[in-house]
Amino acid sequence: IREGYGMGDAYWIENQIQLHIHFALVHQINETCVIKGKELPFELFLYAEQGEFTIFWKEKSPIICRPGDVVFVPSDMAFQLKTDGKCGLGCIGVDYRLFSCIRLFSFFELPTFIEKVRKLCQTIVQTVRANDFTNSRLENAIVINTTLYRLALTVLKESSSHFQRDKMECMEKLSPVFSYICKNLEKTI
Image (cartoon, rainbow, N blue to C red; front, side, top):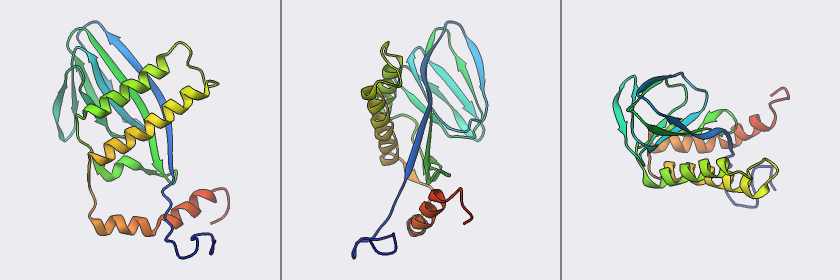
């Protein structure tokens, strides 16, 4: 290993991704109601398991979510939901970060409805809701983490970048710097 950043003549890039699931649940709403969502410090995936809801937010058109549809709410974005009668609202709050400080999805424009995303969201919720789910069950923890990574990969593959190629290459060049900072946060850098 040469200077801790390479191996032989191989080019070294580290994209350290940290993820944390805050919650995964389905909330049954039995009447028409309006829910005000605050700006959250994590990403939120919402889907209609049954019934439908409409999501409203600043600078975007309202979106009607029917059964099976998924909508992604970026972190730090206030929103409002209106449900129409009986609605099963699936919610997954998750935090994806590069180098512990850069939000992964902040680089991308995410599409609203992707079938694969709905299935992955349902897998996460079903695993969390399983009667035998506990933190001590290693297989469930592996299913959750694997599915969260698959969810990130699916969203990124289906998304378009906010940045031009040269900006992304700049981020790649700074990768060792971000890694060093992340690993040495408790020290004077």
